[in-house]
Image (cartoon, rainbow, N blue to C red; front, side, top):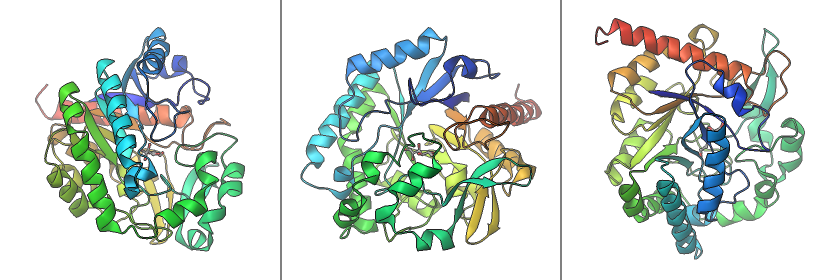
Amino acid sequence: MEMTLRWYGPGYDSVSLKQIKQIPGVKSVITTLMGKQAGEVWTEAEIAELKRVVEEEGLTIAGIESVNISDDIKIGTEKREQHIANYIETLENLGKAGIHMVCYNFMPVFDWTRSDLARVRPDGSTVLAYNQDVVDKIDPAHMKESVEKMSNGFVMPGWEPERLSRLEALFEAYKDIDDEKLFNNLVYFLESIGEVCEKYDIKMGIHPDDPAWPIFGLPRIVRDKDRIVKLLKAVDKPYNGITLCTGSLGSNPANDICDIIKAAKGRIPFAHVRNLKYNSDRDFEEAAHLSSDGSMDMHAIMKALYETGFDGVIRPDHGRMIWDEVAMPGYGLYDRALGAVYLQGLWEAIDKESGKN
Ligand code: DNO
C-alpha cells in the first residue's frame, strides 16, 4: 500500500508539494497535466517537466489521475481512431517515464456530479453534497454559471469551462448512446490500448460513476459489483483494473464495498478511500474520513483491502473544508491530511493484528 495525495500540478492547486511532503507517510503524489484536453497527446517533454517539478521537492509520481478519455471515444465517432492513437502515444510516453498507473473514467459529459459544493455541517465545516431533488430541477445544458459561482474560482476536473460551454452539443451527441453501446466502446478502447499497457506494465484503473446511478438521462456503466465484474471479465487482463472509489460506489447504499473489493481482488491498482453520510435515499453529504462521522465502516473497507492483498496506490479522497482554508472544493490540504493519517493508522493496526508482521 502506497499512501499518496492528489496534486493538480503547477498553477492549479492551492496545496504545495512542500506541504504534501510533510504529511506523515506520504512520499508520492497522483497528478496530471491539467491543461490538456481529452484526445491530445502528452509529449515526453511535458511529462519529463512534470516529473522534474515533483521530484525536485523530494516526492515521486505514483500515477496519473486522469488521462481523460474524449467524448469521441465514448460515443464512437469518426474521430475515435485518432484519439485512441493519441492515447496510446501518451501511455507510451508515460511508460517510458516510469509511470505505471493511470486512472480514467468513462462517464458521459460530466465526471462526478454534486448539487452543493459547500454544504455546512454541524461542526461548521463545509462539504460536497448531493440531493436528487435539486439535481432533478437542474437544466444540465445551463450549468456553467452556477458551477463557476460555486467552485471558489478553481477549475475543477470534469467541470472545466471548456466542457461546460458546449454542454448542449454534448447531450445531443449522446442521444443514441445507451449502456450497451457505451460498454462496447469502452471494451473497444481497452482492447486497443492492451499492447502498450502490457509493454510498459501500465495498470489502468477505471473510476466508478459518481453518483452510482444514471443522471440527466445519460448512460452509466461502472456503478455496482455486477457491472464491474462484467467489465473485468470482458477484457480479462491484469492491465484492465478499477479505481476503487468508496465514496462513488458508496453513494448507493445498496453497494457493499467490501464485497466489491473481494470481487475485484487483484484488479485494484488504485483506491480512493473516503466516507460519506446518507441523509435519505435522495440525499447524501461527504463526511470526515473517520467512520463515526459518516455512514461507512472505514475499518472494514481497509481490512477488506488488506485481506485481498491490495498493494496498489491509495489516497484519501475529498476532504471537508476546515480551519478557514480556501481551496478547490474537496481538495484542500487539512482534511485530506487528516484522512491520510487516519487511513494509515487503520492499516497499521490491521497489519499488526494480522500477526503477519
Ligand atoms: C473527483 C475524482 C474524479 C476522478 C475521475 C477519474 O473528485 O475522483 O474526478 O478523478 O473520475 O477520471
